[in-house]
Image 1 (cartoon, rainbow, N blue to C red):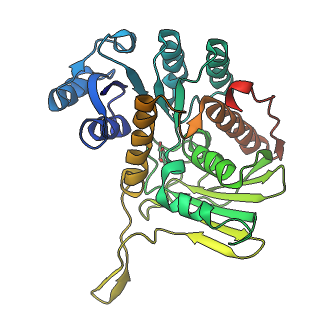
Image 2 (image 1 turned 90 degrees about the vertical axis):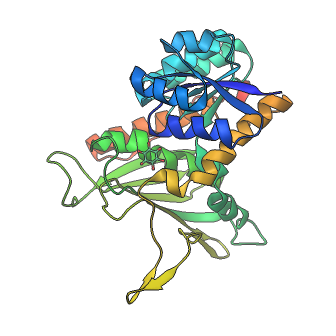
Amino acid sequence: MTIRVGVIGTGNIGTSHARDLAARVAGASVTALYDFDTGRAAELAAELGAAAMPGYQELISSPDVDAVLIASPDQFHAEQALACLAAGKPTMCEKPLAPVEEDARAVVEAEVALGRRLIMMGFMRRFDPGYLELKEQFGPDGIGDPLIVRNAHRNEIAPYGLDSALSITNAAIHEIDINRWLTDDEYAWVQVITGRSGPLTPEGQHDPLFLLLQTTRGTIVEVEMFVQSQIGYEVTCDVTGGLGIANMTDGRYVSTAAARRRGHSLPPQWLGRFRDAYRLQLQGWIGSLLSGGDLPGASAWDGYVGAMTANRAVESLRTGERVPVVLPDRPALYS
Ligand code: ISE
């Protein structure tokens, strides 16, 4: 059996997902594509032997589409996820679930009303071998419980133009999610600290940003978010535990020496660093649809918690104050 996937959005990440589904994910095929840039969708459709659809609604309701992957710009995710729920189709939605927490909440409420989980969030770091190995170090036989987690998330240049709020809701949302997952804990508060900016930062924006969070059990989480770092793409995570420390660097890259320089290269952006994570995430999704098992990875609830925490961080960016993160009760569907 094959899960026939329709992909909404054929930009950078949508194209990568569609090609992976067509060639590198067992049990999947791509039957339909939609993008507001119809020429771009048609080109990829020709490459993959899929149909280019006139609109996302047509794609979702197509009898040739069993499951939907949403990879459109962030502000369209929630309305498209709602349409998928209304059609009863399993959906993988790229992060964030929405830039605005109320929109993310509406998706959770619609899924709860439906009474079954159809949405998996594309927080691919939960499938990354580096983060998985890092989490395995925790516990009494390893570094103990995490006490302090230090993260750095550096882009070479701002992917969609630099806006500080967007660098939280679109980019630092990865750290917001992965540190919840790493610590198995919820956040108690968040504070965003701004300081000197880099040479490429436009007037009125802040980059790098420093996010400080504390979980309800007291773990301190720091995030350096630097979207115009100019160094290439790099994501690191260092954990101080009660019994030891663990560092996740880009250590999986080969180190070479030439011309009196030893080191390793950095990819230009995230498709290089997280190539395996993206493919493993898609394989996990398709595998669960084929077997009828539980969806792996992050849920719509995780998407909502991410969106609301990011919104609290944006509030702190504006006021400079520490902002409490207060979650409503978790619906039973997500327990
Ligand atoms: C982008 O949207 C992603 O999701 C990448 O993983 C992230 O590293 C990048 O900063 C975002 O803009």
